[in-house]
Image (cartoon, rainbow, N blue to C red; front, side):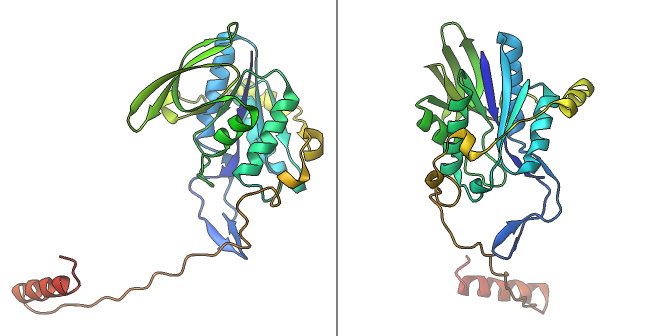
Length: 263
């Protein structure tokens, strides 16, 4: 069985976000594996350990995303692939799902593709659905538990955590599984895993090697095409001090709140 986990490198959750020259910036904050993706990585490793086969981590991003893939290997993934190309810059969820779908098609025999719930920078959660649609696979998002998986029969049974409660669904494999944090407890990278990650050669696939149509990637292939990003206007406010005795202050405050229709 071949399990693929899609990961993204994102700013640390403590990073201070700002807008500079029409672009979002997080300054010199460190870049890490998207926290939601850690649960997907752990689940990919557990599936491999339980059912055999191999687990592969893939990421679309700049050269720096290679460090996120090394973390995946240090945790227990067997292989990793970086999809990086200047032509991919500006890709939104629509274009990203297209590139990942082409990469998975290039990989060949894949049984399960795992995602975290969403990325903490974009917060859309759209890529798993878009990928499933492009591949024609079942999207099992918000999965809290993979109850059953039969690699031989190519079936999967999952529990989904919805606002209305839990939903139990079954599907044929291959499938796209989106995880939530209650599905497991991610492990820490082991010392041996860190040594393995340091020695592992992570190949880089370009857009051409993946077989992408230039019109469907980058800013040209994205649905959201804003010319720039603007910082929100500064908040303005005024403070009025009410003086008098406690009783007078209470009356004046009540009158103002009534006048402002706050009460």
